[in-house]
Image (tube, rainbow, N blue to C red):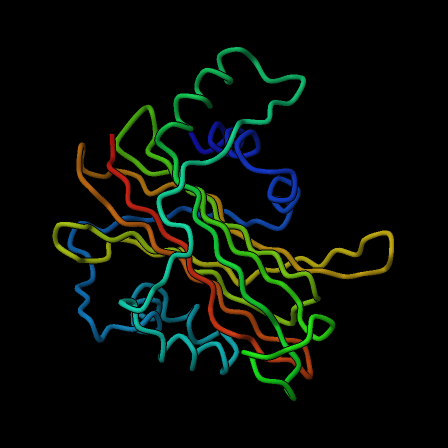
Length: 246
């Protein structure tokens, strides 16, 4: 199923996102039946530490501090519940793959967030264009067509070389409010274009499996990056989707 979804993602996403698949890691996202209860005071740091204490402790101190200060309830999705755009098919895409892609496209959600690195000597509300660098974060999620699971992909793209970053994605039961699963990566790949400009990309592709049929879930994602020397980050990047398992 994961192989099919990765192929579907390459069909649905734009060229920029498709290229960034090279920097995406993939791992088995285990869903727990009991879940982790959260309230309005629960932070991303507490959530991540609960599911992956070793992973949390391995993060740079400045990212740990940001996660501990960032409430789950403060998430802002700039473009929530937006259906993904028109499919882009490759020459070897089969008719069956096209049909499945279009069917799943109708149920998919593409959520995006944009932030900036800015010169540390300027205000984040008043910085010049020459002293900023754009960061993009995207979440594509959709219910599986075959079983009660949610397939997802996150992509992070920094137009300036980024020392380090973390991407975290969590699954919440909308009815109980408990968090059932959490996945993350701090892996980045640096790429240099023809003009010598180096940028950083990363992401996750996986499946939240063994869910309840017809049950509603919320997928939440966050990306926090360490800025290059001499720069600051305006804010974490968020994305999210609300979906019903098949």
